[in-house]
Length: 279
Image (cartoon, rainbow, N blue to C red; front, side, top):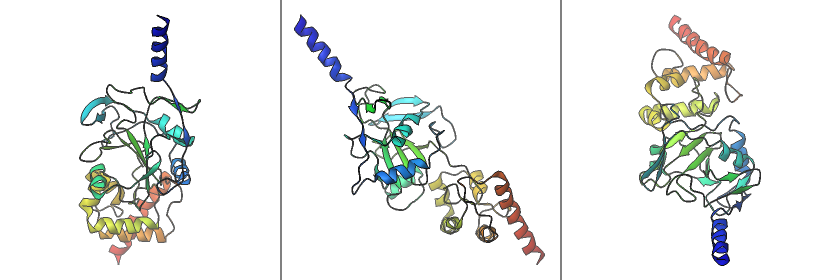
């Protein structure tokens, strides 16, 4: 009898055994400095996952094609463990560079960025950040075993995406954790309005429908970003308006321009247009 009880206790202990976090490595696929730099750009208030329509109560998790959860998801604890420098050492992809294929980029509606721009992280709810441990054997949803289908993608600029279908055959359904505010003139979506947006706008104008699809923008959202001269369109005239705006010194150095700066951008663009018409 005692032997049976001992075996039961031993079995239960093995089920709830916690593993220790490691430190993010530095090798051909990982960079602890890149992880630290990216997470430093993520606001401390980020955590709630939103779909592309701005809803937070319908986020899906699919495990090998089976829907196991629909509802709200908050990944603040995962973001905090990344800030703490905690690496899931038995999952080599954790904290590694994620370079999506063109198909994945299109399906996920990710901005096309340079090589090694995005980082991938496991999302696993069973963590004790105070103790520096996580528990692989605790299933967050029925039938989901570690590491599960949930991932975070974090861009170097602080963009955060949640994927609840890592094993999807057609790519991933990427939801926004930290949506970058839509800012007039911010064509590369990094929260700044600067010279880099001129190149981004030139590239967008080469295939505007593709840009809109890649960014996951509605027609109204596209105008919010791109209609610098207020004519209800996004075209080459807006490119000139953006260049003139930056030449005038109104570019932003802060992650999110103050409301007055945004107003100046619109007024400046309209003033430029008015001067041209008067000529």
